[in-house]
Length: 175
Image 1 (spheres, rainbow, N blue to C red):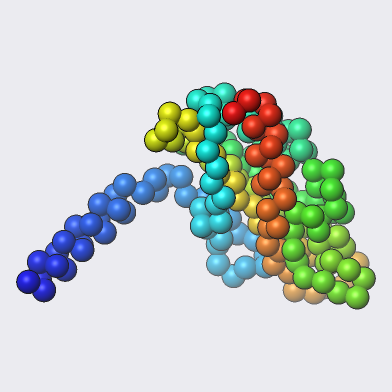
Image 2: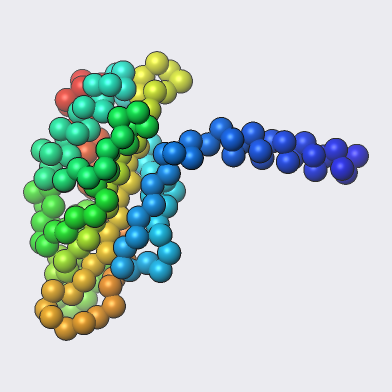
């Protein structure tokens, strides 16, 4: 009985691994982390009532509208990525601290005083409800711009940039 349970568990696990979209994994190396960050684990998923093609095009336009450069894109896998770009002070028309949390010091949020190396990725896929599942993930690593060397600071997303992207895409596709 024990052996058959283990076998059933192994079969179920194998089925899950085989069904996982391995080609859709996005890893990024940033200075603040010793290991690559798997952006798939940071995804925020949303549903849209529109077909994937126009949503993918709207994501590309939303990136451009918000000043986010696109690096690697894969229309077949539905990935739009900006692997690494740098910004100081503002992003998408707002102070950096609106989009990223890097801690706070005596002068306020570190995100507003650091040079951030940023990664932004969007995934577009058909959903089971005849619409589209759209997912976003962002992360950053901050460096002191004063010239004094300090260890890079990890910066987590506040969700504001992902929300702006979703609102822009939703407006563009009407979904």
